[in-house]
Amino acid sequence: MTKFGYKLILLILVISSIGVITIYSCTQSHPSLAGRLLYLRQIKWIFIGLTCLFIFSLISYHRLWDMAYIFYAIGVILLLMVTFTGLIRLGAQRWLKILWFNFQPSELMKLIIVIFLARYFSRADSTLGSRVHSWGFIEAVLIPFIFVCLPMLLILTQPDLGTAIFIFIIFISILFIAQVNYKFILFILLGIVLACPLLWQLLKDYQKARLLVFLNPNIDPLGAGYTVIQSKIAVASGWLFGKGWLAGSQSQLHFLPESHTDFIFASFAEEWGFLGSLILLLLYYFLIRYTIKVAQRSSDCFGRLLASGIGLILSIQIFINIAMTIGLAPVVGLPLPLLSYGGSSLVVTFLSLGILINIEKRIAF
Image (cartoon, rainbow, N blue to C red; front, side):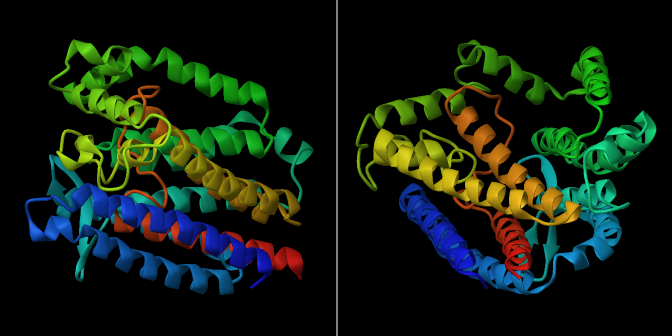
């Protein structure tokens, strides 16, 4: 493993440790013992994630090329299993019971889609540009879009609108990176815009409410807008230096729902203030910069698209999660990478970074 790989591991361990500390702070006053021990479960997931990182850092990423379509099929099968046998929590059916833990296949599907699209757009040779740019609409956009739509529809039935939209954003972003004809991309975006009235009718009532309170949280301050209002209060009350660890009133007194999962950034900002939040954002900046450098230096098309896709997964989730906590994006239920509580997201993130390290190793050699 290169020295850069060690730097990356140190960086993600620092961010993950901040997550454990914040989770402990958010849950230490939980009424149940299981709730108060969630931070220990997060530590366990970190060790499992590190194991996955080391394994995939040793396996050549070119093996993922050979397995890309098989991974896609496995991902779809897992999503179908969720539809028929998945666990139901808070009205959503998103988890599979595997041995002693609950697994969320939609988190793994994010990475599988990146691997699939990287394989698809680099299948002919190792160059980008004029080759892909010369493809017709069906080959460049429609065929991969059909493959992306299948898991999106399965995820929508769970229901999980946020992850489905996230996968679509990844798809569009990779089209740009692969240098697909921009007219084709604009055409599919225009089609989505024109279909918005129909898509609105297909949304569930609570999903419509989330989009409406994004425009004005005060239209339902005790219902759909409650979490966003409490989140903004938490962030604002942190001021410059924060209230201090274990002293955040919004999370300690349980005013802020999901304070250790989707809205963990608000809990962190309340306790550590603007300066603490700035340091956390700098850590994420270094993480994203690492993925960009690996993508730029990769010697083959598949590695470049794969590293870019992993960087997209991280950066888009970071942006959307933080934006929704401060009211700049609708609440869509995306975790903050490496910080939010949750085994599936954490392990898949570590696994993705293991692949990134392997791409860098191949560059070094």
